[in-house]
Image 1 (cartoon, rainbow, N blue to C red):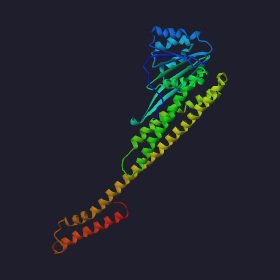
Image 2: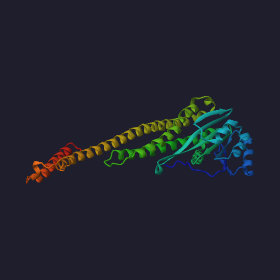
Image 3: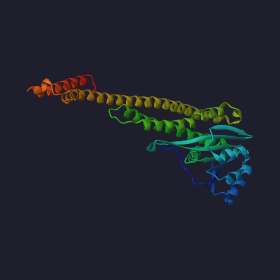
Length: 343
C-alpha cells in the first residue's frame, strides 16, 4: 500500500496556530491538563481575523475533551459523539461550528484485514478541533500538506477540513487498490489447476470489504452536502474546487468498493462450484471403482457358495476361465470409464 501518512500519535494535545496570510505557524505540544495546554487554550479567544488554531487530540480521556468544550463553544452532544467514537459518517452544525465524522482505515495485506478508526472534525470561525480514535490518524499527513501549501492556509479552518478529508480518502483509494490486487490473486488461484479450497479466504476478504464499504458509502452524501447542503454558502468560494476533487475521488472509490464486493460474490460462487465439481469427480471415481470391483466380487461370490453339484468345480479350465472372465469384465469397465472421463 502507498504511504498515506496515517500515523498513530502518542496521547497528547497538539495545538498549531496559523497565520493565514504569511503561512507561518506556531506549534505547541503538551499533555493535558498541564500549564502549557492551559496557556495555549487561553490564547484562542484572542486570535485575530488572520489567524486560526488547529487542536489535535488522539484517544482523549473524557475529562480532557470536556476541558475544551467551553473554549471552543462545542455542543455537549457533539462532545459526547467525539468522546465515544464509533460514529457513522455524518455532518452536523452546532451554531457556527461544523462537525464532520468519518471513518479512517487502512488495509493490512499480510493479515487480509481492514483496520478502522474514527475521527471527528469541528471547524469553527477561528479554530479546528480534530479528535481521532483507533490506530489510524490522518492529521500528521494533513498538517504536512498544509505546511507545504501556504495558499491553502489562507482558506482558514476549511483548509484543515479539506486536508483531513483528502488524506482519509487517499487512504481509501490505496486500500481499494491493494484489495483489488489481493482479489486478483485469489481469482487466479481459484481458476488454477490446483485443488485448493479458498472459500474461507474469499469469505474473510468479503467481510473486510463490507467493513470498507460501510466506511466509504455513507461518507459520499456527507461530502456532497459540504458542496451543496445547508451552510455551503458560508464557506470560502475557493474551497469548492478542492472539495469537488475529494468528492470525485471518493465517488470513484465507492464504485470500486461496490465492484469488489460484487466480484467477491462471483469468485465465491465460482469456488463453490469448483468444490462441487471436485466432489462430483470424486464420487464418479468411487462409483467407477466400485463397479469394477463388483464384477470379480460377483463371480467369486458365485463360486464361494460351496454347492456340491456345480458343473465348473470339476472342470480343468474352470478356474482360469473364472479369473479370465473377471479380468476381462473389469478391464472392459475400466476402459469405458476412462473413455467417459470418470477415471
